[in-house]
Image (cartoon, rainbow, N blue to C red; front, side, top):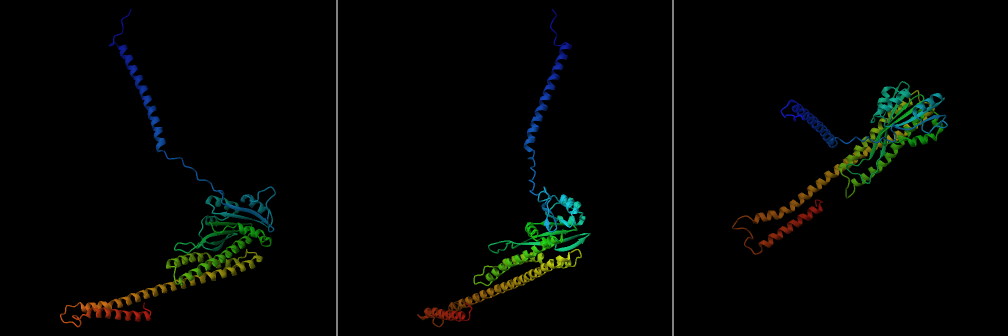
Length: 394
């Protein structure tokens, strides 16, 4: 039998080294696996929550309504929905004679306007201007397209006028009128045009005049809104005037100034529109049959402008009258203070005289000195009070 291997022999040392290497490799793999598990656990703790996409709007392409009109009536194709895609509507309008597209948009983005500009052949400047709101009323012609900007106005209902009350809310509408299309772009919550479209669809004699009928209908509705808002604002002004001149005054300077600021916003919507309407009446592209309608719109706008100008004058008058009332009230307060100071001076003078350190003084040693001094105070003070009360100082 062979003897057992010696621990000091080279074979035993080689086996021991290989076992140690395998053990180290096993420990290394376990350590890497453990570190990976710990890393994934830490990632779940510090990793931000997944981003939830914002819900899409019900109208992602900003199209409110789109239709083709021919011979004064709305013409959806058989089998087609009432609201057509604007690309399909443009194709149908070009194919039909005396037809046009009315495309209504609400706050379109840049990508949407770029596609619309490509379909309808709009200039890049017109598409860029239609993206943003807040434009001043005006009219301009770029190529075959006329751009008309109108300001919308709406009266904000409120129970009582305060220092922060919003009376008039405004927005804007851009009308792009081309040879075979009319595009309305609305910004802000004010001035939806669905009622204008329904009303115009019930007037085929106006609608058959083409895209310019849309510009007339939108302008006519907005001017009517100006008159309605002016009537409601006039009611607020009458209420403010009554409160300013009432015995118990409730309207302060801040209330009047707040309404004056609201009127400035209203004036920015109404007053600048007179010049664009005058330019439209001189435009050669405007059909002659629509000129009387626009003349009527200009007449109603003149009435609205006159009323807004009168509102401004009335507000200035109320403000000046309120300032005069405040000045008068301050003078009355000062007179009352001066009258009471005069009455209080009577006993002060008598008490000061009798408070002097004199050994010889009339009535000082008399038993009737004190009652006499008090009686003199009462008589003189009462007489002075009666006199000041009679003259209106008290």
